[in-house]
Image (cartoon, rainbow, N blue to C red; front, top):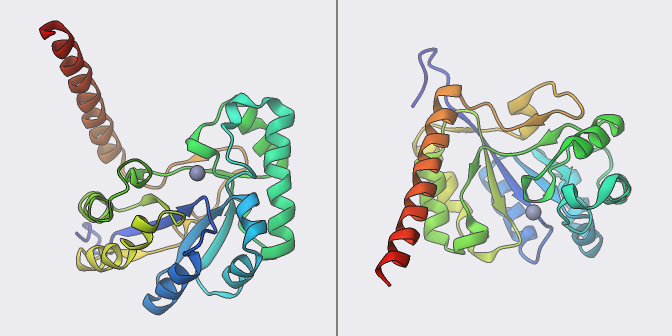
Length: 235
Ligand SMILES: [Zn+2]
């Protein structure tokens, strides 16, 4: 898996929506395995689990970021709504986490010119992801392990959810599987380096891989549409 330069492939594990009931347990695992990770916290959940956020601040290799306060689609709440959703969580993280990344990940990855402009003015780079294992949709530990370990490529930012027990159960095997493929784990900030407020980042996957992924996603989409159409015709 190492590229021509011989450098090991890099990957960032990111966890959204927490802290949840099992985030503490996940932090134990990451610390034991010495795996860095970036947590995109929901302000409302950070307030519910202040001790977990406090722990993140003291764990080496664990990064904290803002995933809004109440998980609304920021493209539907207007400029004031965007400001409120981001600022409230900024305050909570300032209080509980101390210095943090300043990254914002908009819920469902949705952003528009208003969201990007607020992020720019307030100094937040927007951090999206390049590999969505759809743990939120299939709720399957086996699928989560399979999709991540089989599909990860150099420069991927992997989207996971620490609020899902099926995902927490998958992380040990994901670490094992990616290590076997030679991957090195990095926080998002270590993977991306310098970032610019208001700009959206999707990892550092090569354009060849992103184009190939885009094409297979389109093929899948059209196949589903075609099958639906066929199904309708037969009835
Ligand atoms: Zn989310």
